[in-house]
Length: 435
View 1: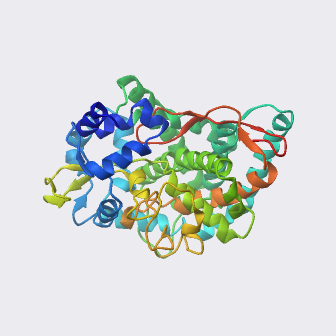
View 2: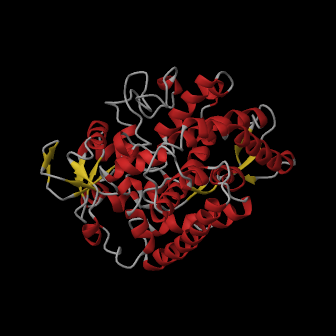
View 3: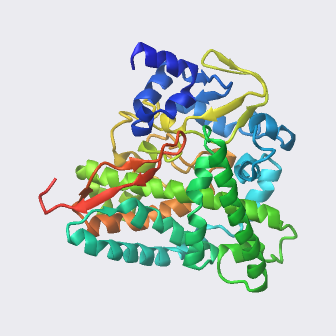
């Protein structure tokens, strides 16, 4: 970075992350920030942590050193909370709750959203993957370009969510159409028109989920929504309709664009590192290692969108974070910290080979370091295993079906500062031996 860029970075890293240069490639700036200003105070007063050790500590310290904003504080941390439906919904999600409320809600989800439930989705996920690849094949085999982002990466989580929630696919198509608008509206630099579009989309999602809950209550099926609204003979506690609607909204928002982006990044990694494709051609352990390394190298969420409020003055790296300051975590920078992962810009699935991504220390490398893309501690992403399952079911099949898949032109990224997602990823087949 030149001197002018360095000065700008010191003023506001969040603005720099929204710049066209960082949208294209944020990692040089993140490296600079981690090395020169790892406890960064932005012009807005927000703090941003970029070292792995600090981020990992902050994730584990939720409930001790950090807390979520109390309902009466929403206007302070979300100035538009008084008028925005989407902002209020985000503030009501599980990620914003502290114990004991968080403990209660997490327990109620976990009793039904289990690995068994996710494993039950594997056969239908495999069928969806095969059908989407079948649909892409004719155009690819004619030598045409296909937008893999739209035709596969977005479609897969959308259709898996339809299975998970017990929705008709057409209904999920309608809901998914508004997810991009909600994500854009919740971005830190969103305009008033973008937030208004997000609120309109959120209102449609809420109305649908309210009706869905009533349908599942009177006609339950074998899906997660039916289980969450159903009675549990051994549990007097249940989710209220408002809690369940907020939870479904959060699951859809948090698991849709992020899973699609990771599929896109995985396909780019398959093309960029052909010497690493063998991980997708062997056993399930190798596939898991490839998936974890994609998540480490290209975290779909660059920094935590939800506030962590300092409960006391906290000193990190010689910088004092004052009590009640809003602290965010630059997850993607922590994942590429050389103090945590040797040669961190190198794509190397061996870092995770033989580890257990869903075990007691999820995301741990062979060196005992935690991959941060799903968070850690009490706010570890509840949909992490669902995302991993979709990646594990799809990537080997893409590689086997289209081994010469290559970029048709440069992908187009969404202009988001905190979500590293795509607008288009055009691909085509090359002849065997082609580049």
